[in-house]
Amino acid sequence: MCKISILSKMLAGLALLVGITACERDDAEPELETRKFSRLYVSFEENETSSGASAVNVRIVFPADSSVFEYGVNHVSEAKGGGVMYFNPYLKRLFQASANLNGVNDTVIRSMEVGTTGLLQNNGRLPNRIFSYVKGLAYQRASNVLFAVNVDGTSNSRIYVVDRPTRSAYVRPLKKYIVDSSRPFWGAAYENNRLFSSIQGTDGGIAVFSNVVTTQVNATDSTANMSYQTLTIDGSSNLRGLSYDTLKNVLAVTDYSGSGEAMAGRILIFEKFSDLIGTGNHTITPTRIIQGLATGLKQPMDVAIDTRETGVYMYVADRGAKKVFRFKYTDDGNVEPDMELQEAGATPVALALDTRDDSTLGQ
Image 1 (tube, rainbow, N blue to C red):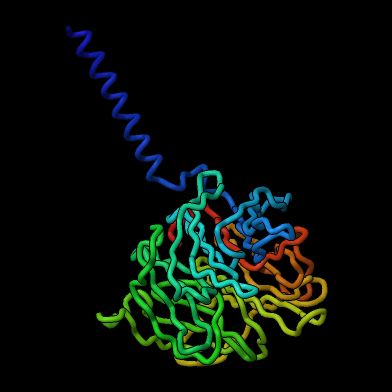
Image 2 (cartoon, rainbow, N blue to C red):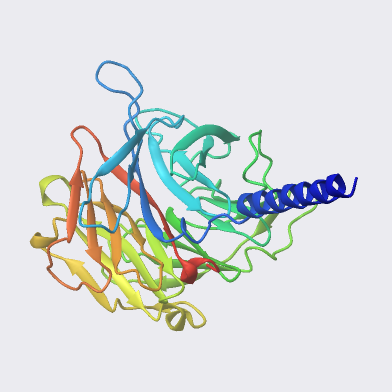
């Protein structure tokens, strides 16, 4: 009896230990071994192939920071041509809006579950006809809300705040911020109750929206008028995607000028960006500019900085060159890219970067 009792206790203890370990492993995403990596997701605007089949609109580069820089996995999401993307490791999901080209009106924000290997599953969707011009996505973890920048320069310009973004159901935004803007916005980055987006057009800039989490809305229609601070960038022509590394306090934003063969692109880099925000509308000047023939930049649409403390690279999706470039974020002037990627018949327009180590867990 005693031996059986002792054996039973040992087995029960072992089962409890296994159960606790299993719970910890499931709840501790990402683990120490799996959080030290760099994975790049690339969004392509094609919707159909020449034969009418669904085109690959997501490609994955893993590891993105190695000496071998190549696409490893192709994926077909449900987006009608890939548009802007966003990834957050705590959500374990990759979000993608549609490019909405050639008369397509896809008003669903797609959500793909990311497995431990980075493979994607098309098992989430956030539909609403108001998502007609989604050009920026960002996330605030504490409130579990997704920001969708849908500012097209019309009276319908809004920034939508979506709660519980991992669900898959028709969406009624928690908040709808009405933006008085005569020009469209592009891109999104979040930091400390502030949302940043690029203001398009000649002498555009960065829009700074304060209190985007805490602003109260009208109880009847969930709306609120949202003003913003303008950080003008003199000489800018077509600002597009932006990336803010809060650890290094560096903001990068894409810009291009001209059309056709005359297109010329550049990456504007602002160090100590939070110090540049200040108060009131004013002009800011880039610390460094990557531009020139050697860069290969033509029509850069998005940029992603490696946000790890040890991260040295940033990645650029160039629609005009039909390439993805890798530069060092400390580069300046007319420099050649560290690496580049091109896929026949594929046009990269947006990026989402998953870079993990101890330094990024709080970001």
